[in-house]
Amino acid sequence: MVKKKRPREHIIADLSVNHVERYVFLCGYSVERMEYDYGFDLVIFTYDNNGEIENGQIYVQLKATDSLKVLANQETVTFPIARSDLELWLNEPMPCILIVYDAQLDVAYWLYLQAYFENLEGFDLSQVGQSVTVRLPKKNLVDQEAIKKFARYRDDVLRQIKGVIRHDA
Image (cartoon, rainbow, N blue to C red; front, side, top):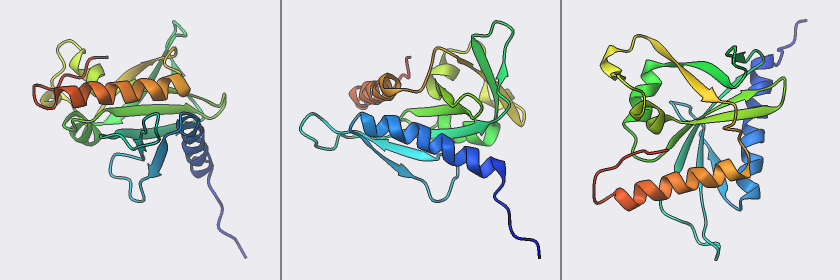
């Protein structure tokens, strides 16, 4: 009798969640896993120095891989993302962070999606095919400082709520 097997993709997906959650918790924040993934895997909630919840959220999409694609310069990671995900992320006012987890090295890299595409010269979502490849700097390591930076991005958006929202990285 053949038993069901747990595929490697599920294992590294869980490892990627664990990797990010640890840094979120070390910052004193909380994270909610999305039961149904329609473009976001995690939502990060932050708290002030008194432990009181702060307004706004940070949305995270995780991608885990055993075969990370690195450019020849060894400083940049590339990853394809679906246009359908971009439609959601680029129309979300709160920061959307793509995190690509390298399961072989147990490291993760991040990209602030709205800022990336706002700063990408000539980018036009209506001209994108089924997918687009993004470039994540390897210096964008997921750690406590990165999680705190995500909170600052969220704070920047909240300050603009009554004006025009710009996702400047």
